[in-house]
Amino acid sequence: MQTFRRLLFLTGGLLLLSGSVFAADPSTHLYMPDGQLSSHPIRVYVTPDIPESLDPRLRLTSSHEVTKKDTKEDELIQPFVHATNQNWVEIVAGQKVTRTGTLLLFDLRNYPIHPLKAMIRLTPTLYIKESKNDTIWIPVTVGSKDIYLGKSTGVIAYTLALVAVLLIFIILISRAVKGKAVFLICGSDGKLSLSRTQMALWTLAIDVVIFGYGLFHREVPEIPDSLVALMGLSLATTGISYRQVSKLTAVSGTQPTTTGSAPTTPQADAPGGAAPAQPTPPVATHSKARLGDLVADHLGEISIAKAQMVFWTGLMLVLFLTKSTIDGVLWEVPWQMVTLMGMSQAGYLGPKFVKP
Image (cartoon, rainbow, N blue to C red; front, top):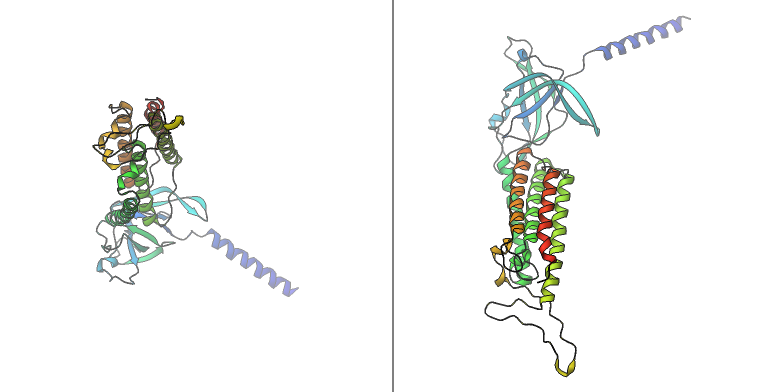
């Protein structure tokens, strides 16, 4: 009986102890979103709320395997914005979790990042004072994971350098095959193709943004559906345009030649009463490629449909690159803009179905 009472007393004590643990305030939690640019205000979230009187400070610790440590890395950075009772969303084990606490904004434009690095991996630590009149800061919480802090100039420089290397490689291959790299954006008639030029520019712009995002965040970005639809329209326009130009050129029976030579046409009657010779597929020559081909139709007339397509393509590319660079993610092109681009491409393709 006495043993049973002891067990009962011990069990009750454990229950009271566990109840006091669960009733205690939760530990301080620091969340710093990964992949922020030092040129932007840096966001740091802390829960529960921290009074401004405790004067919170942030220290960012980095590793140095190759580069030397800068003395500024040990400084405690003071926030320029302290906002309490703020909500944010974190991804925990693949699930979205909403938290409430304090938002701190920091200015890290002068934080030391080596010129040869596009980003730096850091461990954030939050310090506070024990009292308002205290002069010593004590660490209260460390970030749950390391984060990447990037420098926009470094990310852009590395991205452009790699894109330039790939472009040079493609140009060299094209010159080895056809003699001129301009054939990449020419049609089967040897003229500059607006649809091919558009597809090349969109491919280049999207690849630049995706690589820059992947280099900075170390992950593949989520590609918006509207952007996929826009690339699909561009690809479809290029395929239809190429097919129609090839058919119209074959019907006309002309072959592009070098400057100074007359085009050849198939003979009406072959010797010995044989069937008429079939027109030879056109062979493109770089001498016919002109910048004016982007706004001229197959008859050499200025086409308002092609000029409109050039206008929309240039406008959308500038908006896409600007928005994606500022926001740090691929810009989700509005569906209304995708529709307008589709209508413009339909107007561009229409005349290609008219036989000369």
